Image (cartoon, rainbow, N blue to C red; front, side):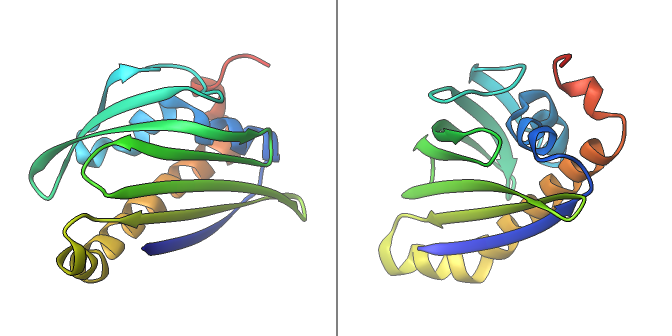
Length: 159
């Protein structure tokens, strides 16, 4: 199983960062580089425990479909989404939000495994880990930008 851990400090309250990470509207913005679209499940707003979403996106020139479900939820500190269907053998993404100084430390723990035994493990180590880390870094950059600017109001429901 390959693991990516990414920490991003955001100068904004944890509750705002938590909601932005669950926002389908912001997810769509952050995944434009893969032409990602939501084809089933929750399409707008903020996800809740038990919600599922099916995405269709282009990775390495190939269209992929992945269904993910929110399987754990402790607002505003933690949530987890796990692949229900898709190309991976297994995929689990933990999202942690810790109040720190005047802001929030957002910590992503992304675990994945490709099928095909040793061949899949080689692809994970040589290609996918770097590719997925870049995808997660971009996503964190977008969450940070929206959280720290007034743009969060464009994608979150009024408080």
